[in-house]
Image 1: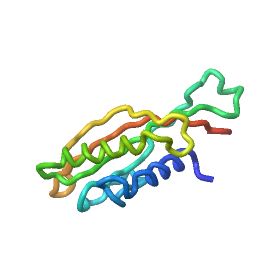
Image 2: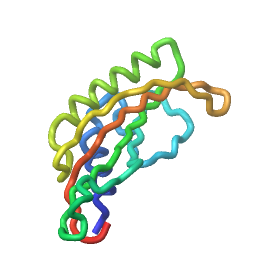
Image 3: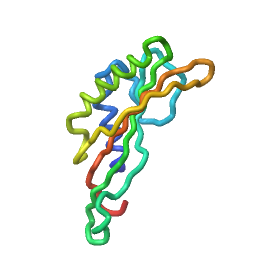
Length: 139
């Protein structure tokens, strides 16, 4: 059985694939490949923490918080910031409904950066979410 983090990332990929300007370029990965035509989205989990530590020894089911990041990548042109913002708006709308079996999926913020990989600069929009879910057994 897949870990909850894996299941969560796969559910986000399924919710976004074909539903944004990124089209099918939605990946369960933090490795950024060479630039493609049009925007792409990369999904990964950064941190997982037990939400209610005070009763950790007495419960077999624990509430867990995971930080999920989505990186929206777009080529550096005159409209890359607008392209990223448009995809981010679509992502927010799509992820406002229930995602997988998480209890809460809460938008935490956005940042925009310009990076260079090889000879081509590109924009990276980073969306951060907090996912809260129940986990049974040992974490």
